[in-house]
Image (cartoon, rainbow over all chains, first blue to last red; front, side):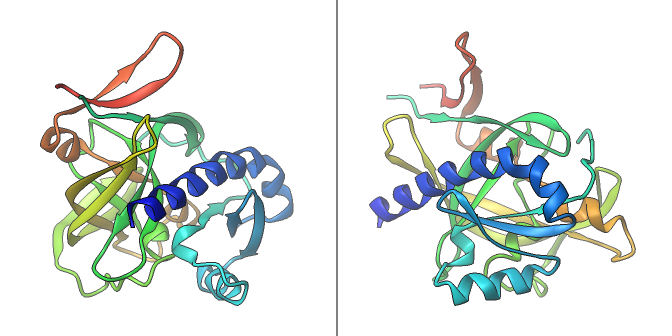
Amino acid sequence: MQGNIISGLMNYEHDFPLFQKEVPRLRLTEPNKFVAFKDGKMVAANSSIDEVKKELNLQGIEPSGAVIEFVSEKELKVIV
Amino acid sequence: MPIKIPMIKATSLGYERDMVSFSVKYGTLPNFYATAIVDTGCPFCVISESTIQKTRISYSDKPVHHKQVWLGGILFELKALGKCRLFFRDIDNKSVQFQQELYVGVPVSLKQNQILVQQLPCFIGKDFLDNNFLSIIKCRDGKSYLQSAD
């Protein structure tokens, strides 16, 4: 189980920065949508996260293991 | 041996932040993965609603822990998920496990800024750092770690 967790975590850690690099382009092509990234590439995009999950399930991808982030058309700057 | 968990610099809400990725085990559901801002100014560990929505965790009926919490100009209530198991990867690629109370930040009104609500990040808060004697260590080579004191 521990090995599965580490490999899942390493896959997620691999995909997250790749998704971040793609955000400027995604703001143009997939504005205001939830975008799913898995294995280094975009695998689904939709304005509804439920639709993204459906698409991932169709592709045999467990949504909880994928990077799924909302990409706004314009970058928001917020101090939290 | 002290615990040493590598952190990443990633952009969230327009600025570079110190963040960390981890896996969460909740009940019998598959682990979910998240990346959170490590924030000593945040009292709790908060999972964003958009992150919890990618899982099958039912959170609408969870007890409200704090009724009115402002975060980034949005009014939230924090729902208690209870104690979860959090898994991190250390510098030797071994898993490090912690028990931690997690909360879900749910916006109080759907009329609030939806674009911002969807993008609010997860937070690893002061409670987690205090409970596990972890600090943010910044090295001269630019790398950062969550590291235990002993």
